[in-house]
Image 1 (cartoon, rainbow, N blue to C red):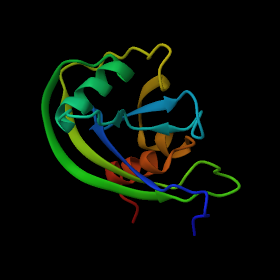
Image 2 (tube, rainbow, N blue to C red):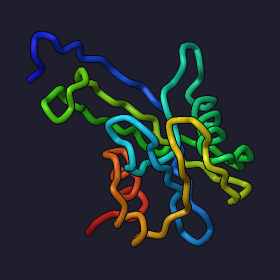
Image 3 (cartoon, helix red, strand yellow):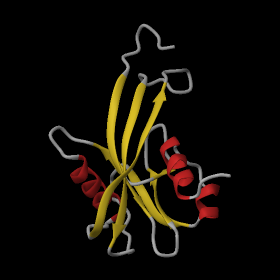
Length: 148
């Protein structure tokens, strides 16, 4: 339950679920904040007036250097609540993410400089499952390779 000083909010984002022909998943590492050092899929917050399609393309370019996209379609909706606590002292947030299935034309990556992420990699199932993941990252890994 949230405390009296808690101001719950909704965070709306758009994210790219990208797999290569070798069945690897594109993941990015968070550079700062509560999730620093944890891995997720590229994407981020939708800016005022921005279409979610444009958001995922902008974020994919910023975080991975990928700008050539062959196809883009909504695959899933991610929904997770984070409650204010001693371990997580920020206000409670309901994170809603539109997850796009993205087919890219190039597999070449470039790391983001001075941004929200500091690394990006094409990961195999075993590599992805061994990484420290954000809840969205775990959602994407399970989407790529469902658990039995």
